[in-house]
Length: 72
Image (cartoon, rainbow, N blue to C red):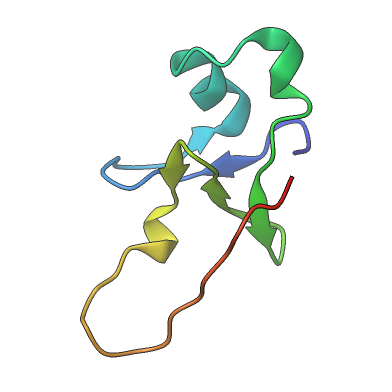
């Protein structure tokens, strides 16, 4: 992530800085710089294992879906 990156976690009104989100959910400081995030077009969509962006919320059963997998 870049300094000041923001996203809107599912269930939250408004956006939040990614760094503040990571601090709030207690990701240790040394891991914050290397913690994976998924983005598209400069927009943060997912912090794996933590929270999806409101942009990825399923609104109905029919539509286009994406499957993402983290491989270590």
